[in-house]
Length: 405
Ligand SMILES: *Cc1c(COP(=O)(O)O)cnc(C)c1O
Image 1 (cartoon, protein in one colour):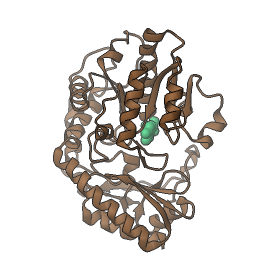
Image 2 (cartoon, helix red, strand yellow; image 1 turned 45 degrees about the horizontal axis):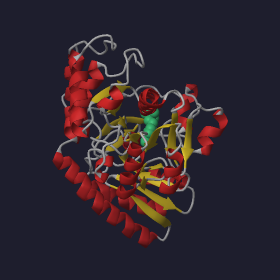
Image 3 (tube, helix red, strand yellow; image 1 turned 180 degrees about the vertical axis):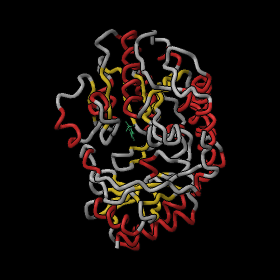
Image 4 (spheres, helix red, strand yellow; image 1 turned 120 degrees about the horizontal axis):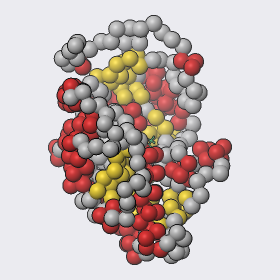
């Protein structure tokens, strides 16, 4: 057996002959460069050009690239030979990871799956199962709010407020829809007997990086509790440290009935999770839901390591303090440039409303050596790795400023 390179950070892959990516389905407009390796907060293309990555693979690579701890966790997990077992059998990593997530979130039970959309689909099903015991089959509606993004599968798309994503695929799943976000509308809608669940992101990501007010979230918690409607917090993007809080809902001092996680959970390996109260869990029977891959021992072992790192109070303090500084820097940059309409965000999650389409700024930033993404047509989104230092962030901000000029 060939040993893994001792340090991933110094590893250079052998170059393979270039292949035109023509066989890939055309869902993305990708730039022409090809990424071949990563180290810290940087990725490198086939010509060894470095790019500072302020997308983190869309909020996934919280610990950056080539992290030694993640590499070691992968190596140890691989050496057991037990990459996958199916959920027909107990394995220790999934049990330990579930216990740790329950402890950190103040919830009770955990279901593992493989992606964000899959976690939300699971949460919708669990909420409906619970609601059916309370109010019969009539109590089944799942509601998302204005600006929401919950995934691209049929039910999650129906809870997502993006006409462009939805229109070509109608009819979407029944019994799932989007409502206005304001409290008066919500109160009115939740009074209906049919509502089983309301799903919200404490910080809306794809919807333009909108930080929901803690007071608003508190009211939403009260409204849903009083009407026996399950509150689902989608923490797939804003959760696990990105806001400086382990979970973004904790900023409002609330505990939801269900929480969904994915993006950073397993350090770049695909993994999702649904966390829930024992009330919800008690309504679920064996056979109600399932997954072949979810919570396998390899991915769960890596997630255990990632979770331990993300829950470290010193990392959360770094995100919180540096995030505040980052917000100040962005506000100053916006004032200097005169080409920014608004800056919104918290922690290491920021949106910048620009005057031309965001795609233009993203392309110019790439040319300057910085990867950023969009959150809607006119919003540039920054999701740097949580381990990024002020010096690295400053470097990226200079590139962003040049791209805006
Ligand atoms: C990315 C995202 C999802 C979907 O996750 P996938 O893994 O792409 O299915 C759902 N909700 C939020 C808030 C997200 O940011």
